[in-house]
Image (tube, rainbow, N blue to C red; front, side, top):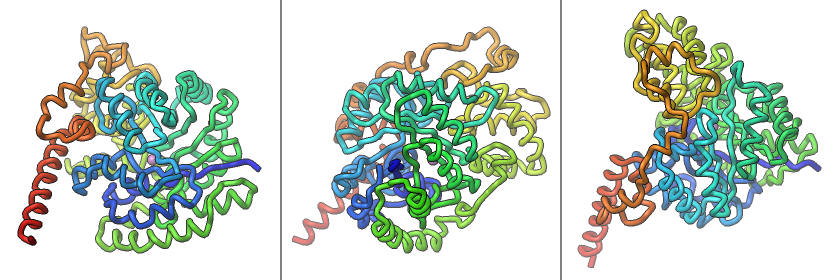
Length: 459
Ligand code: CO
């Protein structure tokens, strides 16, 4: 019987996609031991926005959260999403920071690292992958899915080959916008399976409604695992439902290893928690629905709502059609970057500027300039040469890896934080989000002070 494994995303991607990552540890602590028994391939529980949100909104130490999850989840591998050289943020970090981050993550309980770069420029994931391998953890290389004349099946197969040569243990096709159709998924998985010998995982979202059919066809093409969210936190901008996919796959003779009676318990646990978020307004029922405009415009749903918000702010919502026509032109000029953070914001902002200024590239966003200089990596296609000339003049774009230009940062920052940071983990939190971490450290100090005083009074 062919095996297809399911990863559960309720703690990370579903949490991030449906309620902006505001689920505190206390809301899921009580179900972790049960989740550990369900038979999941992995629990995705860290990375992405969880780190930022823990420090910024939830007064939680993200490292402590990881250790507390590991305490209860002893058998199922824990999984995280890592933005390669950007770790968890949007800028490139020096190699010593990337290595230290991976090393501490393994020490604190992380098992599987899904590592990607927004441009699929794998020079930007090489160091992270290398460190994961050194630490004997599982390195999964991810390929961002997008459509363009340069994103052909050959191109995807080539990217997969590159990952295999880098030594990753598995490959993930990451359809962050939920726009990959079933036939496309089938063709890509097949092309990759014919090229490399590694397990292939597929990641999509329910945004456009394609998710479950796309997964099904991916599995038919030989895909080894899919990402799902427990049904009360599934669909819409989240993942397709765990129980539904499990049911359909088992019926077709696939072995998933998931225990239905336990997934039922997990869903029963999360149902009232979802109700709580809907009632408090933290979960907008709109994000649970199907939104097919992304298929018409070929831009991710999140990007579409950003464009609308930007135009509204400038009182120019009537220019939306023009902006949506300009968006693919900007993307072409920039060499077809996948529309994932930060590229989706960059392309969107520039398309709005081009339309509202009445002249293309009259004003250019700072990030676009940095992109043209090569600071984000190599574009998948060819960047419009006249645009480079117009914006950079005589300045030559860099062709090497941007991180090669960065000085080591960890030891220096550790020195600066003497008396403030209590551990290497604190130093890493600070490097990733300086102001937020500083505020968090201060509040942690105050909280502990109050507890100490309180216990003195009690005596
Ligand atoms: Co996702």
